[in-house]
Length: 387
Image (cartoon, rainbow, N blue to C red; front, side):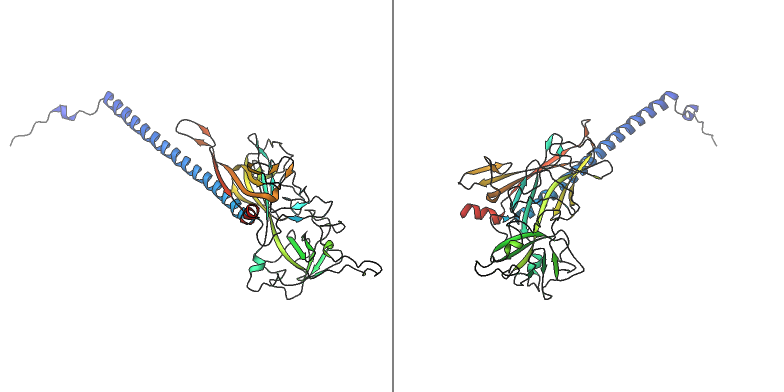
């Protein structure tokens, strides 16, 4: 039997040079893989940031458009509702007296279905943002299965500061779903006209009483005003020589709730705490983020969408003398505000990515997305165009 002879050359391993070459090739392949993985992760992060950014803008613009579509609905008086004479009531102000927009008073003495707040918001990246306030009648109280609000007559105190409703009112004032709360806005109506008031109490202790005490945060309750207040809805006293009655007599009177809704941008500091406005055009140096807020009546505003850095509006108008203007940013023709003649509202919302983004080109910063839409409030545009 022959023994096989094995060459010693087949027992030789890798040389140092071969090992170094193999390691170098492996490192190159690994580096290429890591680079490709990092780029894939960066692209994924960019896609997620942009998706969230666009979702925020879409939520913001849809919420505003939905409320704008209802502006003036539910029987809100066309042309607006007169406010107490000599008063300058507020919008975008909560029950604690905090203001969320600059110059937030109804300086025209009328509560319009749409009130622009041109340059009323914070200044962000050199641009002063807008706000807007719109009004419509709450349908939840009128459309409930048992509702008798539109036909139930109420009793008004001679001072106009207390209204008593019958116990048969349905839904009740303290209904857990649709009931009233402090800060709500009410329209009081009878044959002599309509007036507005802010609810100041006493829920939920009294299911049949609504208080409209003077000194409310929105400045709507002015018992001593010459006109435009709840007390002014009483019948005038008989002419002499018949002596006047001891107290004003109100004709049959009904009530309804309205929604006065304000949209605006709120600034946040590094801890996510809101930063109060410091005046028109003033920049908050410690603001690091922003969000769109929605405020109903005098209640605490709630966030609608995060990372919203710009909000602008413009308006198509038909003036009282028949002059039509398009894309008017402040809803003013010369020196005349014509808020009652707003036919169309253009909305621009800009959102920012939640985080800075490392782009494949080497950039590092926020990205932005702007969305536009326009709304023709059906309760205003058709009236203005065809009447």
